[in-house]
Length: 90
Image (cartoon, rainbow, N blue to C red; front, side, top):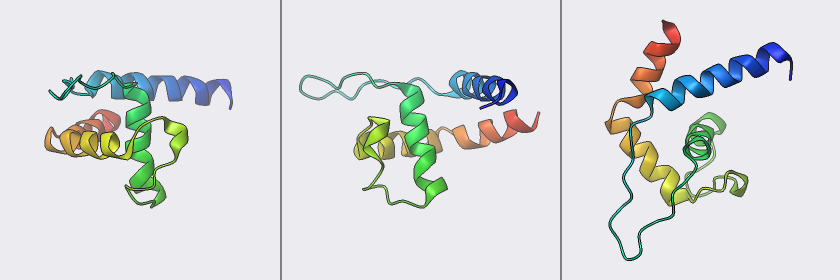
């Protein structure tokens, strides 16, 4: 990776991080462990970009398929994808 592409990747990650809506843990017995938002975002973007099924995301992301799908649904309802698209175009 070149210095420019690393810088672009960092800038993109910062842009996305600033747009991610806050996520509250689900009230269940014992609660859920906090997830790395960047790992969740990467897993969520990987599924439609690669064409893999939601039930088969790579384990290397360290995110369960249920968490990835739940965040995808929540972020879609919150309009995240539209906000990212607009921010990238500006």
